[in-house]
Image 1 (cartoon, rainbow, N blue to C red):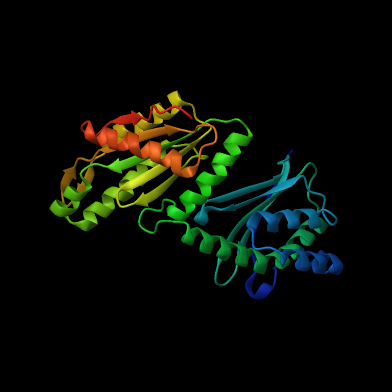
Image 2 (cartoon, one colour):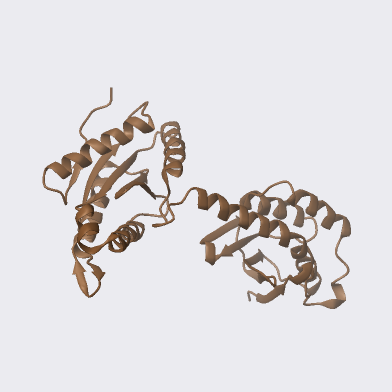
Length: 305
């Protein structure tokens, strides 16, 4: 039968409380030193755990492990899951650092659990630094009001995804969305209401797109949705679904239900496209939707050169 072991590892003052004191001192001091040195070479969370996985295998044979940090919406899988597992919640006096679940095909004896727990002591400070670094990078790439990616994130991500799509001959599209009559909402109900309308729009977008798709705030009431590996028909379906959701989702403000809508322009990736050209076509289609009465989706029909 599978085993599932769980415990909270208190890392206060960098001291691990071991589940088995008998084996607590039997870990490999040289391994701890090598692991400590390796973990100091990177602030990238994925790299950190790859190094951890490589080094720990010499002491405890593992099939894989999962790291979860729900507060930051992080789930990382290394290796593969297996029938037996043990789980650790990582806590310091100042921070909750997430959970690690280790997997293997045979049971975990107390000796191996003690070694795992001792090595978690080495991980704590590099992990905390990596999480802080990740949050700092995220803050520089995120719109503080809506939580969507900002212009810098948009430029970097689009360039990377265009290169990947062209390399692997995949389809890709962008939606340019604009909240209709946004100036009217601000003037009639106040700027806080306008802010809520923008946040509601991003919330709706995130609910409707897949995990590989991304939303960015372009500025003001304008947003870009990147749809990776999406055909024209699929992209149109998503755009229409977003448009319909905004019409049916009322904005509650001071006891009033305020109606909102969006105009959407859709542009498919062409061969030899640039970020500028892709966005220009989406903008052309979006303004066409505005001019035709708002609350509609338009596709840029321009062909590739």
